[in-house]
Every structure is written in structure tokens, then in C-alpha cells.
Image 1 (cartoon, rainbow, N blue to C red):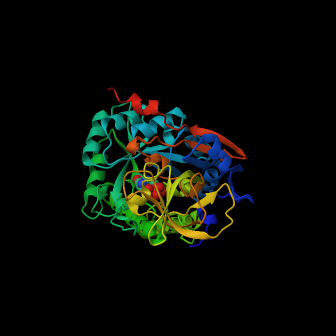
Image 2: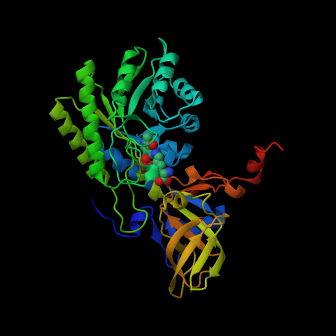
Image 3: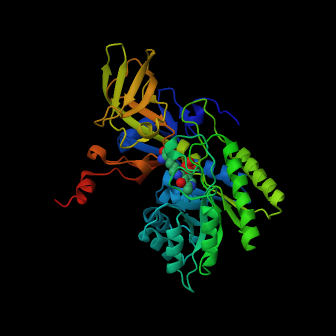
Length: 438
Ligand code: LLP
């Protein structure tokens, strides 16, 4: 796999440093943007999102690329993805409401979830007259969908399979093995039984199989192995039922670099390896090649995002350590505390004449674990009021933000061709109080 040069790999593709120490993304200087919209602020580079969409679309020309909305979703994002001819994966009635508000075509939506509520299923069945594909994840769900179906409504569905492949990622985001809550186990026979039950219900329209082995996986061999096992199940289904399922959804999980020098999965190489693994396995089983779907989330939007914070305080420790506290933290980026995720950080907005120092960038929340960046290299004269930019924050940041400590969630600002556009406004104190009925 290609290793992309440090720094560049973690910033949006159109990032340009300027001589005054600022950085422009999508043609917009981040310091001016912070002045206009306040801090913390999530910035998303529209051109970068579209570039990644096109790279996946081009690489999987004959398949379907469904963007996983859980990484980051708002109406503008849904429209960009739609315009770039991707499909959309949603995992709740809430995400579907956003898709619906942007008029995303129902036949290009898939709904996931290991515990879809009646509200989720109802929303999925009512939008587009049953054209949304529902990825079933439990026996009870097959029964529920069977009960909701009638002559006019034949729910389209895929069965989520746990293929028993460990993608070598953090345990909290590893979903391909039998020791977690997602899917029907291939090894135990539960997956075959789920297919049996789905096919037994004439009012259910079983379209294919799905698997998602986890997130932030950088070894393509894990995806190939999952693909081979899934084709094995397709062959077993044809053997048992005489049915050839037309779709194979191999999920998302393609890793991106968060720090310079890390491995990036190249969409073209990934596509050629996955297509070959599926084609070879199909040839072995004398099976027609199914239509492949993939569901990238992070690899579409992570690198398009930069979060800008303002330094609130700087503390010098006994052993010469430097602790820099900013006006955000685990409420806008819980990933370091959840997964030990590591980031880079850069001061923007002025030139730093002196040298650099080792520093720890911490958040504003009342926990010692609220550390955003460890072992950062920052200007020795860093002071309150300075701006810090953390790149690669487009995926699972805004979508995972909370109100912890009743801190208001930051806005999302899109940049493109030198212009900034507010997509999601900053939360207000009125927003916080609106749900508190006193
Ligand atoms: N498809 C399914 C069924 C999924 O559950 C997920 C992510 C994806 C696709 C997209 O995966 P991606 O390409 O983004 O890796 N909050 C964690 C990541 C959780 C991923 C959950 N499922 C993080 O911040 O690392």
C-alpha cells in the first residue's frame, strides 16, 4: 500500500500554508474563519469530500458506494454525496430524517442497526414505499419485518453476517468476530438460519448479504478474507435453496492516517483487490459475481475536516512540561478518550519566531482523560488567544459530539473556492434549556 508523505496526508487536499503563519483550506484562511464563526469550529472542505467520493466511485465503477452517514451527516453532506452518485447508509430514524430532508432517493439508502427500534423500522418502511434496503441483524427483526409486510409492501433486505475475521483494529470498533453484538455468526450457522427464515417469508425481498468487519482497518487482506467467506455463504445458499442472491455488501472500515506517515488505503488498489477476491471465490464456486456494495464513512470525510480551537491557558509543569488548554475537548472529540486516538496539531494565525516545545493539548472538561493531543510540537511562545488547528477531524467528531459539562456543540462551516458557508450553527444556551422543562 502507498504511504503518503507526512502532514499532507492528514490535511484536506487543498490546504495551503501562507507566509503569515496562517493556513488556508478550500481557499479560506482559518484564522479569519475562526474570527468570523468563533471557536471551537469544525471546518469541512467540500472539494475534499467530493474528491474522495469520486475516487471511490471511480474505483468501484460496477458496484455501489454507500457513504456511511454516521461519520458525519447534515443536509449539505447528504446532497454532496447524492450529487456524486453515492448511496447512503443510515442507522437511525434521525439519520434517515436528514436524508429525507435532503430528498435522498430511497432506492439508494440502506438502513443498519443491531437494535433498530419500531420507530427506525417504521421510518425506513414509510420513506419511498419500501424501497430502502434494511440490513437485518437479529431473528426478531426478520419476524417484525415479516409482520409489517403485506401485498403492497415487500421490504427489501440484506442479512448482516459476522464472518469471523479480525481486522486488527481497536476492540471497540472491531465488528467482524463472534464476540460482539453485530450480525449473525457465520461459524455458528446463525447466518444460514437467518437466510432460511428470510426466504421462508414470501413477503420479504431478500436481496443479499452484508458484513462490516470494523473500522479504521489498514490491512486489505482482512477485507479479502471476509469477501471470500461471504462468497462461500452465497454458494451454500444457492446449494440449499437454489437461490442466487444478487448483492454482496462488504461494509466500510477503510483506515485513514491521523498522524503523518501512517498507512492510507488507496481506493483503486482496494477495489482491485476486493473485486479479484470476490471474482476468484465466485469462479471457485461457479457462482455469478454479485454486485458489490461498500460503505466508506471515515475514508470519505475524515481528512476533509479541521477543528480550530482557541488556547485558553498555558501551564508550565515541574519537569519543564507544557500543558495547553483549549476551549473545546472531549465534547467535540471523544476519540482520544474512547480509542486512544492520536492527532497532530498546528498553531495558525501568526508566525512563531522562537523554537518549538513539546506540549500536551488538553480540553476544558472536568476529567484528566480529556487530552486532545499528546506529544505535540508547538511554538515555545504559545499563549492564550492563539489558535490551534487539529486536522483529520471530519469523521466521528461532530457526529459524536456531546453536551458534557453543558458545553455548547460547535458549528460546522463548509469551505469551497474561497468562500465559507455555515452548515450547522453553534448550539446556544437556549438550545440547551429548551429540553429542560424545569
Ligand atoms: N457500515 C457499517 C455497518 C458500520 O457500522 C460502519 C461504522 C461503517 C459502514 C463505516 O465505517 P468507516 O468506513 O467509517 O470506518 N466512532 C468510531 C467508529 C465507529 C464506526 C461504526 N461503524 C471512531 O471514531 O473511530
